[in-house]
Image (tube, rainbow, N blue to C red; front, side):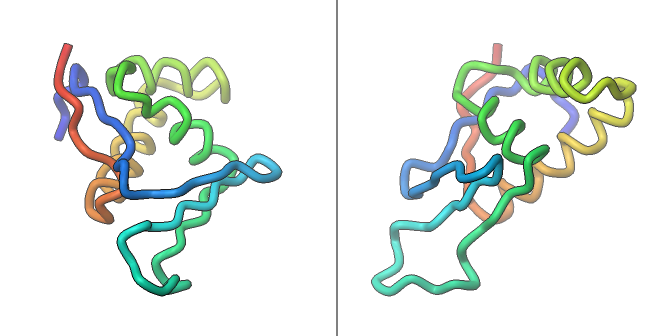
Length: 99
């Protein structure tokens, strides 16, 4: 998954809230809340989560992370793509298209 023109959006079957720069994500499809399915994102992951809005391409997200955290593009690309892969594997985001 290196196509940086892809756009992702959050799964609509989730509830999420940002508290003290951390994001809690709770799947809504469960009858009872399974605490193992609750995701807690650290501040850096929360920044990426907020940028996943159905409009930003992966390249734009990576560039914004470079600016925000003053890191090299290659490092940001590796971290962002790994995080996106994890979110997709957990069905927390879906492909929204390409630009």
